[in-house]
Length: 213
Image 1 (cartoon, helix red, strand yellow):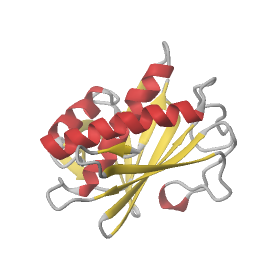
Image 2 (cartoon, rainbow, N blue to C red):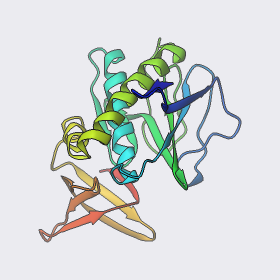
Image 3 (spheres, helix red, strand yellow):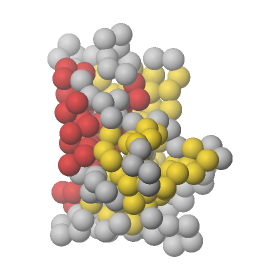
């Protein structure tokens, strides 16, 4: 639990050893073996906070910062909207859900195990204690949450872009029943994805699934 200067909790954390009904985006099943990290934090949105969707980027940069300390020589990168990749394979996912003034950010990180039977490559860090990892994550998340509240989304976006796959990376975005292929063209000032299409135009993706090509 991280405390604000007035002693009021900024975020409360819960961690599970395993899950019986773990899920990712769009209700997808999330394999939940013991040894990985399954943790959630609840943030109460304040009236003067920046727009709540920016918390997805706050969660991403905090997670990447902590995971990079354990990754040694491996390459980590963020992928919009909610994935952390290690050597181009999925290492972790983040799921945010809002109910009134509360946002729950859930983190699933492959520390000891990773699934083999999914539609994209996955990997794990290996040899990391989830109890230690979540303490580090809580501290990093609290720092980035304070920056988001005091400085706005801009420094979070800047850090996210530093840690993301390069500009020009080929992506496919699926929004509802529509699919778009293009090149990664950064984020706009709200944290939405910019995709440069083959005709040279730019499309802003505010929500959807994104895949590396």
